[in-house]
Image (cartoon, rainbow, N blue to C red; front, side, top):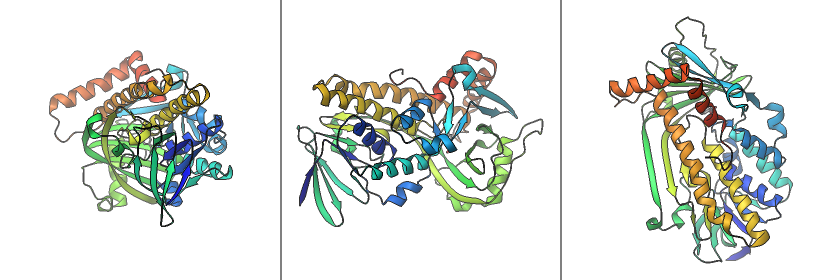
Length: 396
Ligand code: PHB
């Protein structure tokens, strides 16, 4: 077995792990990124695409924002639609900040390209078998690469390998408290070669459930509809999807027209909230989906992962520079405060906009009352806007 050494072993080459490697490099800290999947799988995975301003800032800071600044779409507001009418939430006016539409897939491509350009270690198809000895000051990652079992020794291991990754399993179950909610519906998502029907996102509570109109570019529409759990994407014809979207976005005054076009991708996503606490065990630190999952309503998943690794990079920088462990010790608590804020916000958006098949008329009326409050109250709209565009890093 061959053994190597680095300062920080990063398990997972999605946006969290890749971004962390760049933030560490900027602080003169070496890392090795191990990603289980092949490069093209990482680069084609469709996920949400709303970036908080803090996420935008950090991509600029590490020099990975060139394409985003050219091709990303800044959005100052979004719309909530219910009962045949729309309410605009003007983030720019209410909070002085906006968000950027730039797909996670594109960020991942840029972070990979930059890492390889720098000649820094990033291995694809490197299957991590186990994270060991995290309770000592010499943790190790065992992995298989090109058919050979190898070992990576490090000062610290960061688990950024997603919800189904192996890193979280290295923490004894007795040391972790998990919090979970599985929602009684899923999203059927499509990509279509047609210009978006609206220049801003529309989150709709329709008669038969939620729908979201989003976009990937001025010529590519991204849209979602609520479907029952267990739905097979191929059971929905293109026409049925467009008809359902048209119905859920319909305005009473007839002023909304849905633009239809060829659908190039269909997939179903389950909706889940999950938090595992603490996000640290000894020399193992978890970041992103490895530690927490939010449902996609509100697009917080990627932004939370980015916030985690920003905190972690700062804490590791401090530790290597001065042996001061205070920020490392504070990492889990600080990150979890933001995770819970985002979990609450995502839960609020989700339950307010979806139709729970098990809900009673009381639940329905509460959801509608909250939407009307957002419509009539500046302070409630501001609260939604602040959460959507993202709070300051330590501000949750
Ligand atoms: C998306 O464009 O994929 C998207 C946008 C906003 C969300 C979720 C997903 O809240």
